[in-house]
Image (cartoon, rainbow, N blue to C red):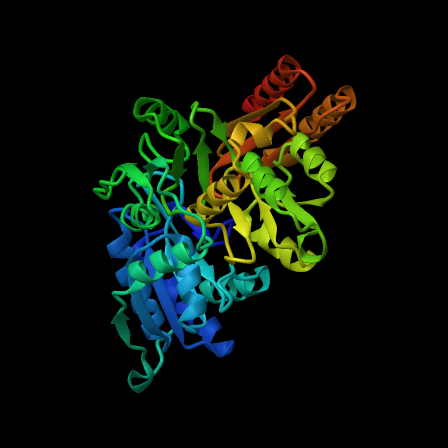
Amino acid sequence: MSLKFGTDGIRGPVESIITPEACLKIGHATGFVMKELGWDTVVIGKDTRISGYMLESALQAGFIAAGVNVRLLGPIPTPGVAYLTKTLRNKFGVVISASHNDFLDNGIKIFNEGGEKISRDIEKRIEKYLASDLSPVGTSNIGKAYRFDESGPRYIEFCKSTVPSDISFSSLRIVLDCANGACYKVSPEVFEELGAEVITIGNEPDGYNINQDCGSTHPEVIKEAVIKHRADYGISLDGDGDRVILVDEKGNLLDGDDLLYILAFSNPNRTGEWSGVVGTQMSNLGLEQGIQKLGYKFVRADVGDKYVSEMLTKKGWMLGGETSGHIICKDLVSTGDGTIAALKVISSLLLLEKKPSEVLSNYTKIPQINVAVKVSNKDIINDKELISFLKDIESDITIGRVLVRPSGTEPKIRIMVEASEKKVAEKFAKDIEKIIRSKA
């Protein structure tokens, strides 16, 4: 099977796609490309999946065979690897993680020297090597491996440094769901050291329970916990810590669109690099309208925090994100960071002396329905009958949008329908789902 990059690196089942053999070759091929670019050292982090140690060994062997030196960070959030890649001057970084997927999957994400996900051009160069037979460098030129034990403490201090010194969390009770993933140790310490009373759940990883009935893909857990503990906020991260959802004191869910609006609303400077906000094709039309009413420009990137980051760089702007909870505060971080996004949102609300609901009352979301249909062939998206059907629906919607796209990380077709009335959006989404299932 050929290995190809998707929306967020290379991802798939450990038993068939992200195997030890595949990781050996990915490390080997990536190592050769990075050396061609003048980069001779890689930092490698991972989440808490049972397959992580096995794949880490294969991956580092591939890098060493290519003559690349390796620094092993151990379990650490994906944005922590991005941060250390940049600050340790090691030129590039790799994360072994399948993000919000369950333990049966794993994946490889790669960062450049600036802590940003590598470009499509570099991905193509790696894919070219992956398709060829590779031989190790001479024995006198192979790389060396080291363990770096300070990754967690360094990331904790960095997260804390993003909060203004005059802001204290000492009045807050926070429920924190770490999804039994990479944030299980570092994120609770960040909020505790900032003074908050922290009630932590999803912090007992066993290699198999990452994202299992917890984390940002299971918001009902954090909502229930906030009400139970009478907390001020609930923070729910995903398995590798690059996305977040929040819950307010009443158990109301705040998705990535809501978090983006709060951050835009709280920013007094709306000129220059702060004059625009980047969303994605999935961002609610109501968010776009709300952001524009605040005086910002609003641009949509393709789905994926990588593309949000690229668009921010292109526009020279600082703030962007996805509905799913990937929030990029480019003045602080180079990629989506769930912990720092939560810190930034809560700090902003404390400075405003407002509850989330008071800020969010200033914009109105349009009813949006999202459905994921599992398929064996994502090329269904190009079916002529489906395309014609979608055009007919779009012509019937006066306010709203229709978006049908293949998932970049899973064997699914994702359906999004927005309409002025929820029942209309639901009907159209069901109709689209029905035609896709008839062709699956």
